Image 1 (cartoon, helix red, strand yellow):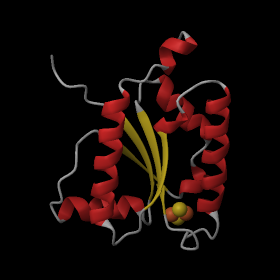
Image 2 (cartoon, protein in one colour):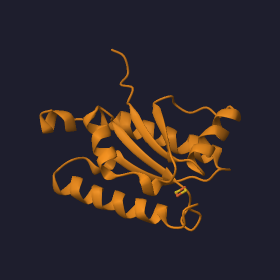
Image 3 (cartoon, helix red, strand yellow):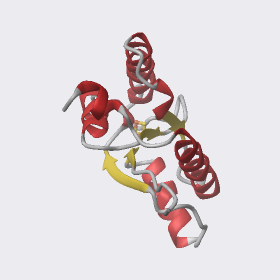
Image 4 (cartoon, protein in one colour):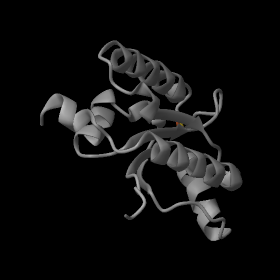
Length: 140
Ligand code: FES
């Protein structure tokens, strides 16, 4: 039987984490191809509804990636992202859903190595966790 290959949805801010992904690519740093990146202007623009929709559409994990605290190009968008992700995780936990499938990572432009390391770790953790069961639970 083929190994489970998770689908991981990544919302990465344009100025830091997307640039780190580009750096990892141009530096030929290897990481698993399971992450489907979506470039957003800022992690603060990621509405929790996008994350929920990702799971409903079959993502096995969702990662929000942004600039380090204090470095957001829109001053405080990443603090907003942090509050939103924390709130969503709390709601998932209260509903008995796996909040561990939601990740938030601060990865700056120069951190291509960190980007590859984090995506590898998230992929491995998601493989261990198995496929997303939210769609079944919500009967959609
Ligand atoms: S611009 Fe990167 S988190 Fe706001």
